[in-house]
Image 1 (tube, rainbow, N blue to C red):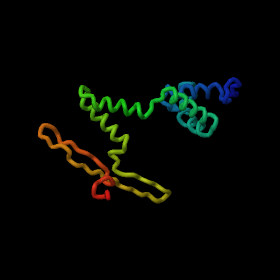
Image 2 (tube, rainbow, N blue to C red):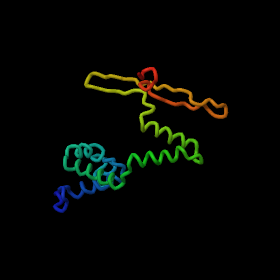
Image 3 (cartoon, rainbow, N blue to C red):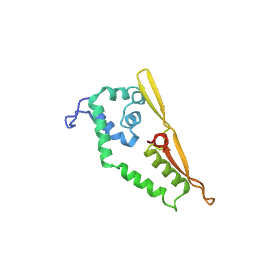
Image 4 (cartoon, rainbow, N blue to C red):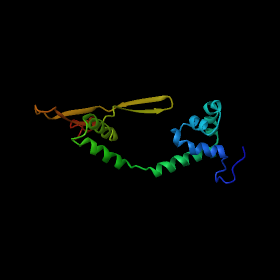
Length: 158
């Protein structure tokens, strides 16, 4: 296929259609390729490699991802604010509140049990234990726990 003179990147019409169809197909190159007219066999086997081997096409796909991400930008602060709102909303479903607290904890690596660092043939696994201390043992409610990493425990602080 001839390159499209009107396309600023020099993509042909089918390549441009592929780039434009990707968001609607969850960024799945094979599905988007079939939708814009590539054969099923080529879309499943050859198209992913063709995209990888074409720096112009790969760059245009990344530009499209960036464009959409910018248009729909949500900051980490907005996400955390929304999670906090759900977590502390007493009228919300308990499972929703629990999930919000879980995601908030993950956002600060509260539940990280190990850190894996891989360097060529060497693999190092560092464990970060988490301590818990009982804060409130009132009989009306479950005990409240305060979690901290072992590095923050009073035994290691001097």
